[in-house]
Length: 104
Image (cartoon, rainbow, N blue to C red; front, side, top):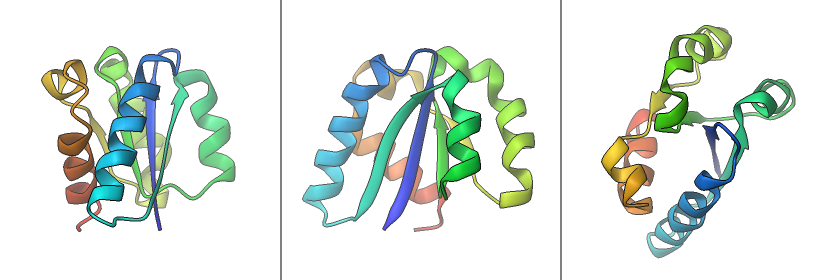
């Protein structure tokens, strides 16, 4: 079971993408805990939960360096979700990116 955390400004718009990613994961029998949080909640979640990959919504891409620094000692890959994939809510494509970042 892999844990994929999505971070956006409020945690709302990304929840639809989470649903699409969960559907894509189910279709390929990939066990994953996929969830979205707001940027303000992210620190607390990272402190209490083991995360395998961290994906930032395009609206918080300016926080990339901050999150990379925050999880550098944990070896968690961090990336910004492609704006087109985010806009199209392409859960399949975003899931593939997450898996690639995890080396799967």
